[in-house]
Length: 121
Image (cartoon, rainbow, N blue to C red):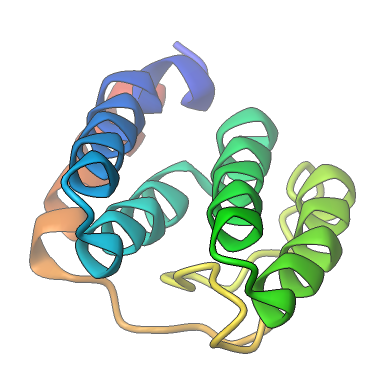
């Protein structure tokens, strides 16, 4: 099974939870779920790019120019660098962090990544 397919249920769950949080006007929690989706999906060009597109949309709705411009840059990177493995592990993907910085992975996401990678191998 490829990574994209193995990650799908985990990433989709985070996107659903983000939408629910945004619908309840909890932008901070919603963005946290997008960050989790990014961490789980960043090894797939599809999920990686989609996480950044959703962050871009969120930034656009909030009229957050820093997030919008940061996500445009990150979408280009996700489309061109994911397949060749230029990824900082654990990076949450928001414009508030360097796109090149590796970050600690939460225990919850580490468990999910282990499941994804074992299904993928």
